[in-house]
Length: 639
Image 1: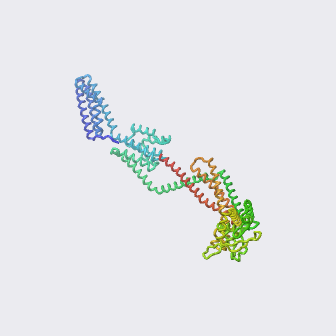
Image 2: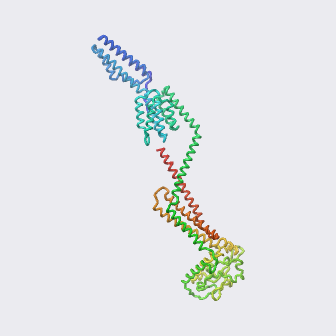
Image 3: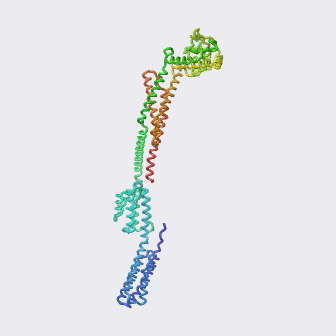
């Protein structure tokens, strides 16, 4: 912003003194002419002209430091031209108008001088300083109101009090300052406007003409130190604008700066306490927000009315699974009283009735069992125990742990081949620690019963004979495989059980039997079945519960994830209830194998995975809620 450059006081003083002398000479000539023509009138005119000349001289001496351009307008104005014309006419000798012209000269000169003085005053540095203050305060109030934020009304009052105090340092407000202040009070606005009581308060502050700096300080106390800085900048600009600072302005400025300094010192002294209070307040607010969002998350993830129905259904399915599996895998002694064994044999008979019993050979032979013998005889040749001692087989252990036909994996090969060849394959320990297979023929009585050990046979020949029969008589091979599987099934849940795969190859018979007492193939299949069926039920419940989301999705944030959390809660609770019921059953029956180990394994897995899902969802939900709170707060401050 460019400001006018004022001439030096010596130039302006010289110009005004010259103008005064010229006006004085013209007036004296007019007075002399008037005296010659009309006595008293001339004398009166001379007195008037002298008074005008003295007035101009006094103005020149008093306004030696004012603008020269204003004085030039005196000579060029209409009143000045009228004075010159009047003097010319007087000099030409019109005595009857001399007195009147003299009076007009006096009035014109006085009016012109008054107009010139007003121009000089309006363009003086003091007037420009006041307008600079107005512009500076406008800029300051815009900046300060922005910084003040929610406390902007206190800032308005403080700013108005400061404006009026500094504008009144050199006297009362002039009309221009009063009009500007009225306009600012009418049009001062932020978003939402200024309440009526605040406007009345600001107007009362502006109209108080005898306000002291203590009154100003009382309003400044209500604004922040940061907002106070914007007021200080505006005051500094206004006071130092023309490099001319009066004593009153300097004193007022010093008072203001002392006040700002004292506020800054007090802020530094109380900084630690303020920081502590601010931190404590922020922490308390943060905890309140966390608690509120936590409650909201709990309400949205707790089970609803329809969820309870799903929970009851899922729990019933899981409990039924536990009871059914425990019933099917109940350990029973082998024999006719074993209901599971009888059911499997009945199923075997029903299957074998569909087979054609005729074959190329009607009777059994060495390493050959007729198809009729395979289909009609319920037993298997590797169950033979008679004559085992003379061959040194079994040695204090049950026959199941010495025969390869009872191995759940190797039995698919050796057991099936033994059935097709009426043989038994056993395991003998070796020096390398791995059992060596030995094969013996199995002999039956005339009725095809009472199997007993016969002569030793070649294991390779036995396998070769069985493999050829697979191609020559596949129906006999299929019947033998079915018989092998059913026989393993009948032995799974008996007191001896079925060993783990390859156990009798790695361990001796005694240790294989001992291991089977703790962990058998039946136990592994039971636990696997428990886990597989529990996982299937969980999938089914999740699918059915997820389908209902189609009718409940409201499109809100985290809607799908929150619904999934409820689904996972249903699954976790149903699994936990089912596993708990198995604990009760095991305690009542005093049978630890009734414990739902497979379901418990699924429950533990779900606890880790689903709990992590819910934890991550809760964290994201909390962060999203907090971000929304502080984002709105930031928008409220910035925008």
